[in-house]
Length: 147
View: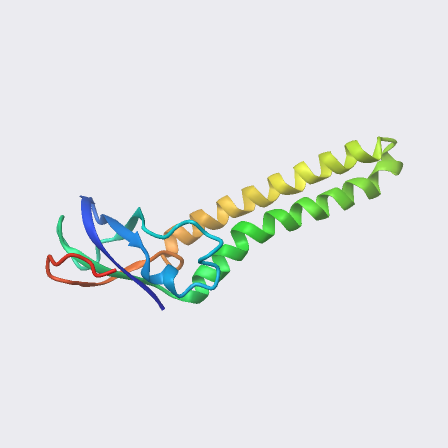
């Protein structure tokens, strides 16, 4: 479970905007040296299930498996679509009487576009289920986060 602490910046209806410092989860990541996210702040919108108020320090969490799954979907699926589209376009070039390079580019663009549409639909479905979003797990009494 990846846990972070942050301060609620704003409450919008049933959502809380939480400012977190990206350090604790990043400290244990094997790719931390190749990624320049340490000591950066970010805002995360989460459901305010605990009725926290602006200024409250809260702990939020997200299962590690979810992060890996989402990373795979966002980074690998479009690249795979690009490659498959290029090969498919090249294979269809001769029967369609088009230049092989042009067919590869068109196939890549088409498949990548389809992958982005599929990811957008997945995002809407995930948004409604809440399964792939961080959750507020406790309020830490107006204390400042320890990172």
